[in-house]
Image 1 (cartoon, rainbow, N blue to C red):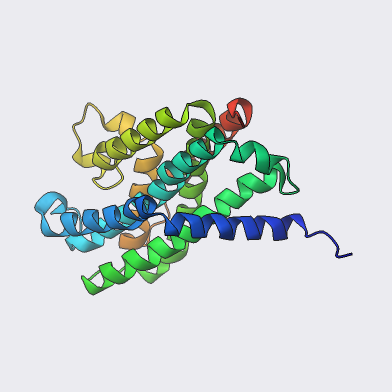
Image 2: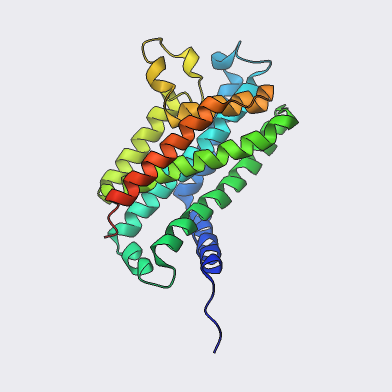
Length: 247
């Protein structure tokens, strides 16, 4: 008789399965790849970001990478988990050897895998369009993207575990639109009306977008946005553990 697989092995297999499902889903691909590419092109051919950096593409690309993390970790994973919960998939998987812990880590691993595909795709297209990130900022950007994934995955699971699936679909899509348009992720909070800037600056979308622009455009290591992301990830994780409903 073969020995049972370790938890790490089960998480790896489940993460790979979820990543393949996400990449084969047409709606997920639109959210993960098509919309960020359209945002990249739109911000590059219009004057919205003029005066914020040396070139439009150098300012636009970090924000689009942040948008990718939010799209997959929050909206994509939130909707998928909400419908898994509705159809009893979560309850079934949580009783298998994978367990609840393995299921959650498997979902997080799937988000990271899809994010890698997104980052490579966006970086190649942006590179062709003239994007030149500072090499010293790339390790910081990777850390920021992982913090962003943690925060947005926790928020997505919180919504998926507390709202009905139909409501999860509406809430995550609506928040994606609002945060993309005015959450400081593509357009810096400093360019928004002064009356809303204090509220936008404490959002995870603004923290991730601002920190990535600083890291990849100036080689900066900004601690304040990192703390903001850690606080959001911790608070959302605690709330999700307390209120998440598996069925």
